[in-house]
Image 1: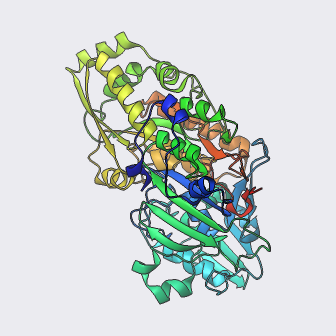
Image 2: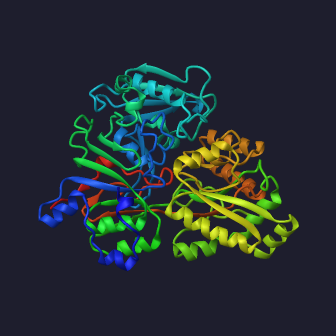
Image 3: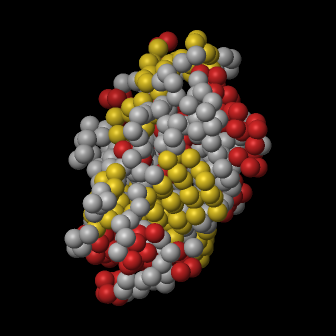
Length: 532
């Protein structure tokens, strides 16, 4: 695996080193042979490169993190796209031909394309969609839309072979924006699932996307080949797609320069972005930010059941110093759960508690001290930010222990309910989609530390409305309430980058598409490689 092969090097060493490897491009270039029409994609081992429970949409707890992989295998009923510069973002049908909102906003009608087949040759029809929705909602997967306001009866109704209605108990304005990041967007073949059984299916899932699985080493290497039954003639352009988990961004750049990979998804290191961008053979495409880093606080447990302790963290956190020192002032600050690339963005919140070290020290002294364990996901960004926060909070007299977790352990820790503070991202293209504001702040969420009925009511109303102006105002109210109660300090929005060899192009790879959550969803159907 790459994370065991490459060791982090200095930036200068990355320029000077061209390591040997096993990838076909590296071998081809050294032998003088042309590269194959395939792409090796590098994914951060702590996040997108972790799929320990397999890739069954119903049972994988990491489906949202594995968004790029899931889209390659399953295609998706809907996807978010945009103009090349990131403007005019919009949801479009992929395996679905379109949608309609009816019944006063309480019904979503999904129309499927005629003639779509799973890679096993069976039809993707309305019954297959219904089967997947009901199965996915019956599992505890974090990407299952169980918090959606489903109708008590007849939540899915088939009217013909290519039309299915999703019914809700109240209007749900966020539904179509939330669709692409939920597991009901990834339709699995019912025939293959029943034939293979869940244990085997999660290792080699069968979808109707542009690629099919031919090899899977969990959280290490996933090998896909072109799906010859894909509905769109002449697509995908690539013959083979290989996803590899890699342990560091430096190692990722090294692999790109040596020809052992063609793409690193979701790079966060600004220095490495600049390094890569200085090369003629590398293209860096920084995506519009939609997620904001936030320090979630568990308000049901000491010390953060006390608003004063929560306030102390606000005052002890110097966001500008982190953005300047670690990210070269490249990431925009945000005091709420939205970011500039998404909907309903509000960068500042009236009355927000700003950095004030002396005030933080006074509160810590008043409380007789504060001890906190700060958890984070084991990623390049997460660990650097956690270390910086630990240093800043210690200046205020706060005793801080940091713990970094693999993605699966993050989920278990949240579900255990004993955590104190967690550095996470909150947000999505739509605040209600994916790990957005309700996911992080509504009382009925597994991954929340806040239990506030007033906030719940605001968020429910915002998700229900089909009036964008009303939604904007409600999310402003929610951001103000979170700030007033000191529920969670927000930091900044990270606009991650796709770093690719110059022979690659495609939407979300060399064009800008706002991430539906943390990483931009590449539209693999249209990715090309110029082999001349």
